[in-house]
Image 1 (tube, rainbow, N blue to C red):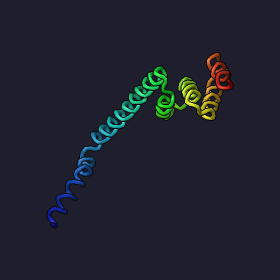
Image 2 (cartoon, rainbow, N blue to C red):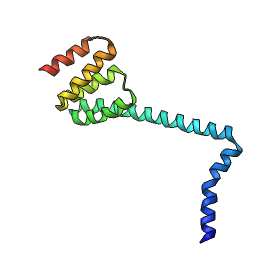
Image 3 (cartoon, rainbow, N blue to C red):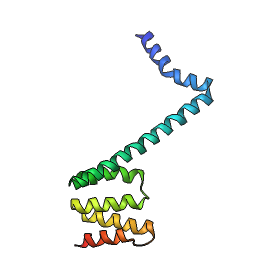
Image 4 (cartoon, helix red, strand yellow):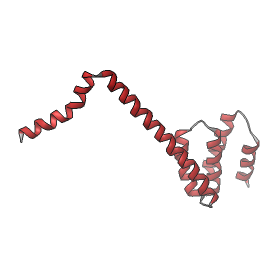
Amino acid sequence: MVQHFRAVIRALAYPIRVARRRPRATVAAIVLLLAAAVLAGIGYARHEWQAAHADLAADRPREAFARMTVCLLVWPWDPDVHLYAARTARLSGDLHAAEAHLNQCLKFRGGATHEVQLEFLLYRV
């Protein structure tokens, strides 16, 4: 039993020993893993963006709005993402979220554009 416990401790301590022996390689591996994670997250967000467009084209606005939450996490300052989120929220019936996203569009674009004005008109109807 004690031998198994020591073996488990040695196995868990192995990455620490490697990091002490080769700090540059460890830092490079960590940076590479972080970059891969960021790129995978962006790729997933792009997939969700395209799926939200497909859901809205197939008349499934609630699914599209649910997919837009991922896009808003990755691109929170993009006015186009907020505009599309406002559209999906309006079509799914969540008017408070639609208004909030439209106000974010106004804030990020520095004023009303034709698309934002059209969404505000459709929101009020």
